[in-house]
Amino acid sequence: MLVLASRLEQQAVEDFARAGVGCRTTLEFDATGTFYVYQETAGRFEVPDGNCEPVGQPDQAFGAEITGPAEAAFLPDESISYDASGFTGRSVSKVVIADPGRYELTVRGADASVVAAVGRDPSSGVDTTRTAGLAVGAAGVVLGGLLLALAGRRSKKAATAGVPEGPGWGPARNEDDRAWPPKPPSVAQRPVNPQQPDEPARVVPPPPPLPARSPGGGERPAWAPPSADVAPVDDVAPTPPRPAPPIPPPEPTLPDR
Image (cartoon, rainbow, N blue to C red; front, side, top):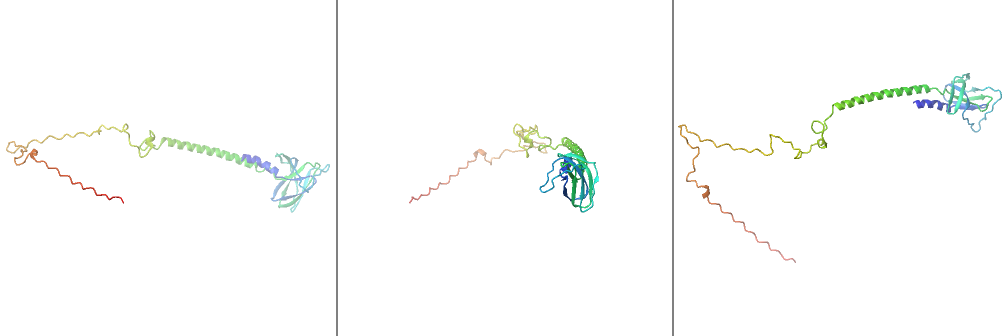
């Protein structure tokens, strides 16, 4: 916006309507308001084909007259000057245009190289745009500081309360801890529990019960030797083996035709 403010005055000066000395020029006013006539001593002025060539009159003071659909009269005014885009000028009069339309501008003067430029105040709106640019810049600095402060607070909170990285609680020590489900532990990493040994403990059978005693005080064995009717295990005849099933004869094969 600061760059635009410096460009506004140059653009306004370049857009002035210009008329030569000793000629009558038609001007089209699309808007109403106050307009100024500037005596421009430096700049570029090209006469369109078929228009009046500037001609100066000796001992003639520089001035202009205007006629049109509404009454308009120039009033002396020397409050504005400009030097922009290669043009140098100073206001000599001003006029208030009440109705838009076509007006005839007649310029008089002694020097044909001097040009009459018609337009508004070129510095109008420049100060407002420049002030707005400064305000927007200050607001941007304040907003940027607030955003940086909020970002700092969020990063501080994230650093104090972190989320566990591994599949279990706590940060991951290596890449294997980040995977889910976790990989089975190797033989070297398998935890050793002293309460659960690798080999199962041997179960010792309890001792045989003692012989029971009779109520009369005598001792009787809780078991008796086998009777004579029961044959010993060694005397049992072995079972003869079963014969193998016969092997069927091979099927005859037919000769090839």
